[in-house]
Amino acid sequence: MKFLKLTVLCLLLHGACKAQYLYERVVQKHAPAAIQSDIAQLYKDLKKYHLNLIQYISPGELKKDFDRLQQGITDSLTARQVYYRLLPVISRIGDGHMALNYFDPEKITEQDIATFILRYDSPFSQLQLRFIGKKIFALAHTGEGKTIPPGAAIEQINGLSPEVIIDSVLKFMCSDGYNTTFKYFFLNYRALSGLWEYVFHNCETLNVVYAHHQSVDSVIIRGKPTTPAVQQPDSVNRKQPFLNFRRMDRGTAYLKVNTFEPAWDAADQQMFAMVFLKELSQTSHLILDLRGNTGGQQGLMLMLLKGLITKPVQPVKFPSELIKGVVLPPSDTVKRNQLKYVKDYNLQGWGNVVPFNGSYKNKLYVLVNGGTFSAAAIMANALGMDKRAVLIGEETGGGRNTTTAGIMFHNRMKHTGVAYSFGLIPFNATNPVTETGHGLRPDITVTYTLEDYLNSRDLEMEQALKLIESGR
Image (cartoon, rainbow, N blue to C red; front, side, top):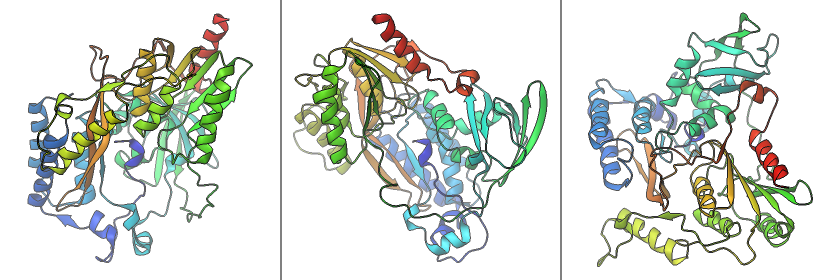
């Protein structure tokens, strides 16, 4: 489950008309027996369809977790409260693609907005923070009046220490295996909406105690009044481009792969053609940036991979139960879709990826971090298999040996209506390592300090340029 998908709106709990959609989600309560039945439904679906379910947790521990969860339901709860109870249990499975949601933003009405939406924004939106280990530092504070100076160490927020804050929010976040770089990526580089909701319960005011230059001070940060959303023109709302390219000097180029989930429009096609038909033939050193690419379409990733490898590679393999021939198609629709996905994957020639004629064959430097996830992490590993790329950065967010994605299983709890989803296809590396439950380890590891953040350093890029210079 990606951290940014957890909650997109902040809700109040005062009186409302029962006809409103959000009333059913955040006010109406469900009996313990109904909630326990819903939990059993989720557990049953996971055991039946999640093929990597017990990769990082034993069957006994998983059963204990769900038993404890069910036994702990002694009072009636709202759908949102059930969601809060479920997240820490789901997190222990170790699947970064799992997702839960207790409401559908598209069903929210104007009445809902008038009654339930908070009248203030998150006070965290005024802060730029960096989470390093179990410490929190301020990079910037845009509030009016007294502000926290850059570089200050956060000592407390509303009476909670940084260690308690970080430990608390990590329990609500999912990642592949035991990986933490994926979680820290969202804490450091994305909006802190999840932190605000799960740890600080959508509070309006933050009392922040901080230390700076051997002195301790505090400041009150109050959420600013919510401003009505303004409809942006299509040019502003345009999707993130697939690729960004720039030439750094005559022989060195930089290629940023933002995502593998574009609409693949004409601009993307033109950029791809320009890069691979013209620019790379004039490039002796290519810096490929996969940082912050949380994945997307396998086919799009594999097309890009074909242009960057020098020999055929087999990035992934599938469990034998999805490969062996089946005399009769299974009656279960989900099982049938799993088999079809793998069959179609192999029919398209993706099982063994062959380079394009004229693929890039010179020096390659791949930048990765905790935000390199799913298809992007698979690509980084495949480039390493080509024995030409130098990987620079930190452990990827995506699992090194396996990740579960492809097509997604979607269902909704019968009584509470909490929606859940998870991947149905295990993408297992053909070159697994003995270390399990972690992402791909780079050849050159970088670790950011507070001073690096304050000075806006790009350590991965610095290392790549250093290697390029030494190679000349």
